[in-house]
Length: 166
Image (cartoon, rainbow, N blue to C red; front, side):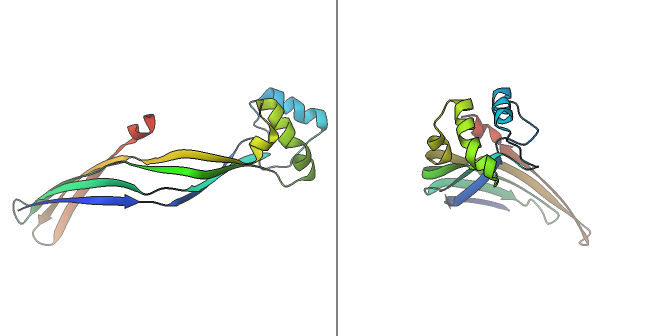
């Protein structure tokens, strides 16, 4: 009537994501917008710059556990917990990519570097170290069998998003 289980989780992987940094028409940095206007830089649609981050994680370990109870033939209930994982990235890369347009390629890297106070070389390619965290998860569910012709089941999952607060 009662089943208890536990397991070891082993995770690793590759990741890649891109994020628009300067959407056209949506500038929040008026200084950068003014610099663009001064050189007559214009881009039709899209994004002037996007950040591309990629890398591979080290192996991360965690655990999971659960309990399943069937008190009779018509009812069952279960609860499980999956621990959060921290996957370390030691040699990832971050690159700032600019719109494929001659004026953007020529002026935007230096203008952005001036606007944020960093060198254009640093903005163009960097090595990163970080952690990718997957939150813990608590799940619970039940099943009721009615007259051997109908099953009613429900479950709920609670993600422990506080893993991202650290």
